[in-house]
Length: 120
Image 1 (cartoon, rainbow, N blue to C red):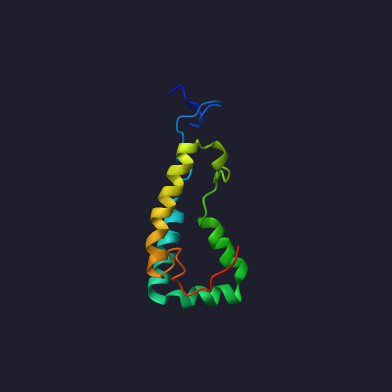
Image 2 (image 1 turned 90 degrees about the vertical axis):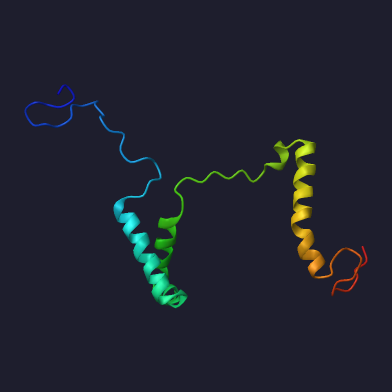
C-alpha cells in the first residue's frame, strides 16, 4: 500500500491511481437527466418545451448549453487547404446531392422552373 498513507488511507501527494471518468463521458446524474428529459418529451411533446421557452427562457438555454459538447473544433476555412482534385470532387458530390431536389422542382437550369428568368 505504497500509494496510500497507512495512517488515514488517503492517497499520497502526486499519486493518481485512477484517471477518472474519460473526458466527455456523462455522469450518472447526467444520464438520468437525459432520460427524464426524453420521458418528458415523449409524454408531453414539444408543447412542454414551448412553455419553458416562453416562461423561463434562461432555464431552456441552460439545458441546451448543458447538452452541447464542451470542446468543438470547427475549421470553416478548409477550402484553402484542399487540392484542386479535392475541390472538384467536393463540387461533384454537392452537385449529385442537390440535383434530385432541383429536378423535382423543375429547376434544371433550362428555365423550366417556376421562377422568372433573370438577366445577368
